[in-house]
Image (cartoon, rainbow, N blue to C red; front, side, top):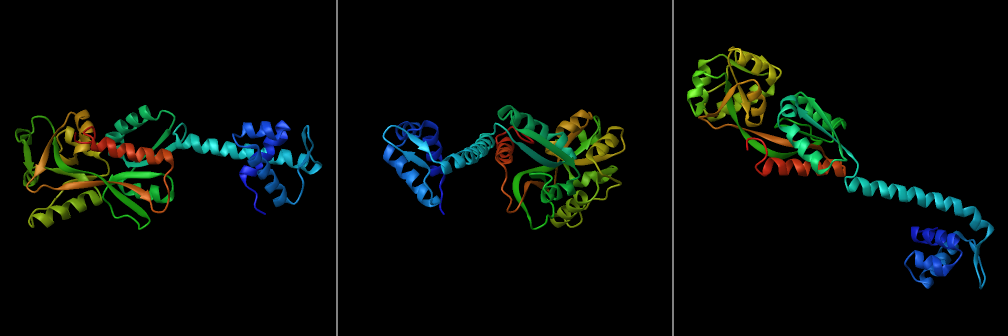
Length: 302
């Protein structure tokens, strides 16, 4: 049995209007095409659905039994199609983004505000978490996509390069480093160094050592969050290291920053998605908006 939506819509229209002529006009088709659809449906079902005479078309007993069922099927289908169209047009939807706490407090609020102005009916859920937790939030389905620095990720996670940024030294106003336009990495050894725990310091140390063999990081203190490091720097306990997009938070703490050089070391940032899992229209729109935001001169470090 091969019943099509075209046949069911034809059946419903003829039943409602009691006329092939009026039903054909309603469906923007020809009367012969409509009659053919009804005949095909009756042949597929093996029953007659209409009693036809020269004046009017009436439902048979089987047709009357079938009518409310078809009406509900098509109403449910139309509701589904309307919902899909609404989601596709971004008149409704939700996007869930996982990001490290520092990025969630600096770069992403600007991106979210810009996205909301363009798509006011899309809800946003921002999951601020530790850097290492971003890919796992995507993998578990808690987040549609994640944004964060380069990390070792499971094979099920796809990583798309978003932007690249250099490192900066952060220090209080009046600090000896403030007299320089750029700061060589070796100068950090002159002051107590506060860095982030885990892969941030480990990977940075490897990168530096690969470029200059005798250059390495020897932090005096490691902490979990950049906000903690900045608070410690602000009261004179040392200097710290961050990337460009952290500037808004650095300024909030009244700190200054200078680019670190000799060598130039950068950190790459990615959008993480689940391999084989299609993004919703809202999530895809956010990813596109994020790419545009960081690439058109309004993004980090602009």
